[in-house]
Length: 241
Image (cartoon, rainbow, N blue to C red; front, side, top):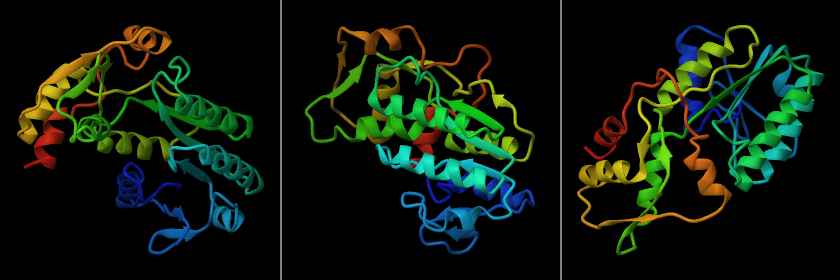
C-alpha cells in the first residue's frame, strides 16, 4: 500500500492487518509493517513489490509529483506481475475544471494503461477537508462559504471499503460512494461554527463560469442511497470535544 501513513492509508492498512491479511506499506523510511522505497525516484520500488499480488495506491502529494509517482508505481507493478491494482479517486473529477482534478483523471488513466486488472473507487470529499476550508480562514473577519453542495464522508468508512475491495477480485470502476447527506456550505459552516464556538458570520460566494456550473449540476455528489453513515457533526464532536 502506498500512502500507508496518511489520513486514509493508516486506517486502511490497520483494517487489513486486523483482518489477518499480509499487508505492508511502501514508504520512504520503511519500518514496522512497511517497506522502504521512494516512489518519486523509483528507488527500491521493484524490490518493494517483489512477491506482491495486490497494490493499493493511496499516496498523494497534492501536486504534479503525483503523476511521476503513478508512472513509477504502474511500471514497477507491471514488472512485478502484480495481479490487482486498487485506486482511490474523487467523485466528479472528470467534470470539474480544477487542475488538481485533471491530475487525478490522468492518474486513473495511467493505472488503466498499465494493463493490470484495476478496481477504481471514487469517493466524495472527507469531513476533514470541509473542516480545513473553514479553519484556513481563521484570520479573516468573515468566513466565505461558496454556493456549493458537498456530501462529505468519514475517512474511516472509505478505508473500510478499500480494505474490502483489496482482498476481492478486480472489479473495474465500482459505484461511487459518498457521505450520508448532501449539504450546502452554509449549512456545514453553521455546524462548524457551533462546534468550534466561532462568532464570525458567513458570507456566500458565487462566481460565473464552468466551475460553479459543474457544482450546481451536482457532479461532485452521489445520488441514491448513501453509503456513509458518519455525519459532519459527529466528526466535529470528536475533534473539538
